[in-house]
Length: 255
Image 1: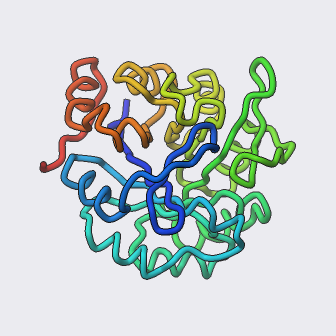
Image 2: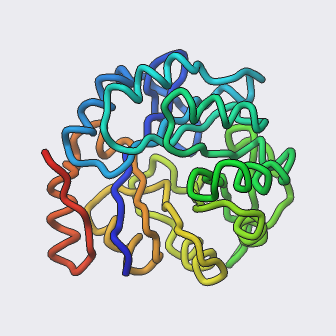
């Protein structure tokens, strides 16, 4: 098994980190910079920043904001929100992001994945997928902050994203988002059985065992979470020690 990465997620709205449940009931949490610096010191392997209203508001994410955040941390920064063109991707990378996460922009124009991978390298291109379960063993891709059913099969879209050149996938379970009841293991298994690029599991982590199950049963190489880290329910060092004790390979950064 590859080294499993622990990845806190900052969902940002109006310059503040927020969190909801199943993409609803959004509440204010903290300053993005303060949390980024905290996670940087706590041993996170990467940090994800999503501007969660950029696409719906048809605007770009603030490049100055990315630059400021990137300069405050030493770990890789994945940035998403309002990414619709190669120019957007280039600007976000040039202003401090390590990788770019594409979601709505790829749904509107799938070829952007291929063109971006060719120009910047697959390792810099992350396809993010928001998914809802619609039946036994069936999941659909949703857009618009989880409000709009695209009609696309989630497994097929994951495969297409890989074939177009995405270097990894973030799989967001809308059903489990913010519930702290565990990742959607069936969804993760269904996707990882069909693709060969790394998967980052997102949505539902609430206790140490959930992260273990995401890696061991769901075959995820990245474990993303928000509220359990934001509220101090789980400390990253504690989580890594636990995973190591269970035979999951993790990296211990300088603390």
